[in-house]
Image (tube, rainbow, N blue to C red; front, side):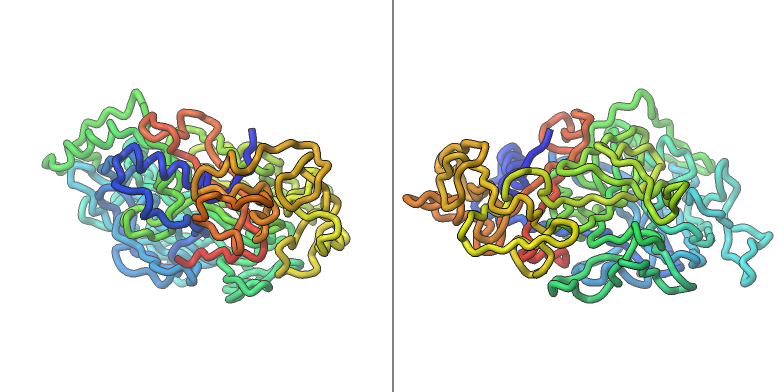
Length: 535
């Protein structure tokens, strides 16, 4: 199934329902929802992390006792640097996203500040050759290792530390998570992601042929929020925007048991908790540690002090959007990105190329990017309106609009134009058989009177994309919406929203209440609208 609708209306419906359900005093205080998203994280080559307990919030009002990784001391920096309010608390879910360069020697020191009853803890870095100590100057692992022996890796005892070092040899998106009592500790929140930026020379981030280097601003003057020019040192992996999605689920029964036993006296490395992790009945389904609609609030929002990352992608038509996807927890999550399929570029840092032509990507085109626990993938999503067979900008013959196709059939002459990247074969094609507004007639669809649909300030009443979309769809005898109040001004913004959500219906609920869980909106706005991810 697929949806195209006014972005602010549909993105806000869930918020209105949530506020009504939990007794909000007023809806008048709501402001227009602008998307803020990116792939934020901490930078450097040495990371001083802690593992400790705290609480995270859910949209049903619950505060859930959890464990998470965080920064014990301040990181070297944050990326993208343009995002305001960046911080790294001592506990967060998911853990801090570590952003490093290919070839970097990465050193992570972990201090175990979990309750004594939790026992030891650790971190696994799948896909990397890890030494449980700082590497020697010649890159070898010293004989004396840090931490204490564990089943899968060296561990940090309660109050103690362990150090891990590895060469970030493989670019792309990777997972990290606890290697100690995984059924309990990963469930409690001990997981995160690593983004390895490709390099063309030691310390130099790659800019493959055809890719645009990261700069302060994009060609249209808007801020560049990318971490790199490409996901890999390959011209097929260029991108214009990037977003990281970590999918996880949570069984509150397990968390309650852990909280009840957290104060137990203990001297055993395996801890002194008797927590039943089976049968497994998750009630919360999260994207980057938040459930919908919380995942549509800004990164580093103050109301989520231990859930700093959001999950609300935003794009202009024609932009290549890099999706960094990590499966965490126990379940597979069949996540569906409405609007287009996703072309997979790589899995766990392994670029998928054609056997006969190494210049071409050969990853599958997926209807759902099903996440397997522990698996990471990189993929490209884009939307242009091509193939819809109607003019999504609401043009009509004689209105002076221009769409001169480039070699690929798109309008790319003026990156500042409202219809930049329009599919010119559909230019001037009517949508409505009998249009109510100032648009061309003769299309295949008869839409109802827009006045019958505009039932609030969160719906623009227009099927068109662009700053004059509302005007084009407005009745000559009235205004849209009739109240004269509109949250997203039609002179500057009128976009589409595509619902992105899990295809497991239970996973789009929060504690069995719909809507919630693994759901968000991909917001598509015309080129003239500023996508501001800095606040």
